[in-house]
Length: 250
Image (cartoon, rainbow, N blue to C red; front, top):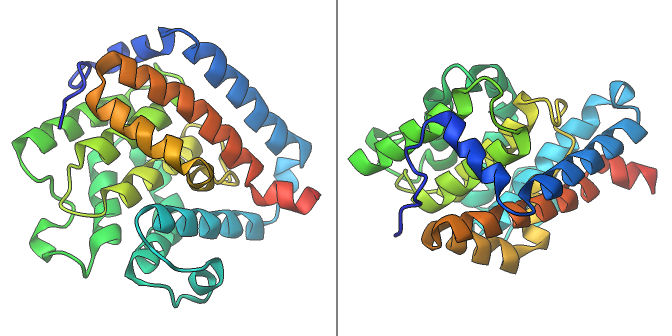
């Protein structure tokens, strides 16, 4: 596995990736579109059921990306396969972790992995990095997540997702952790405070591009990061379109 050239940077240096050609304009346009979706539906009047539905749809999409064959109804009924049940476990606790993310990001990552992999791996390795190199990557990511607003929120969400998904710091279920972390960043950094977007569904809708751009991020250095960030803007737009708010408006 390749190691991106920016791994281990201090938090402010991650923001340099925002200056890559087309990244700022793509992410700014995406944020504007997200804000329009949330604003147009009157966010303050949104019922809690919409958040629950968004989390459920996200759990289903993330599980499918992780290899599950469960249907949405099976996930809704709690009778899906183990991967789907793991995704639901994460979704039920996810929003409670938001206030902890900026001050204790490694604690949040450990908890996400524990939820994702409980019953599937040795309890001794739950929430623990696979080795020194994995621990170092998580420490670097923790610096990004705990930095006080120095980097645009969508950039942080995309980088957090890609770092966990490609560095695979845990022994199993890294994809579930990566996608849950991405959603949590969007919530905790104010992009989507009520968790009404479904970024996981955006990735599922664009699955071939999702998987190829993760490989590019893993192996392609700065060019791969550039491709991933441009892809992420597209995926977040698709995630906004998958929101229960859009369905309610139809």
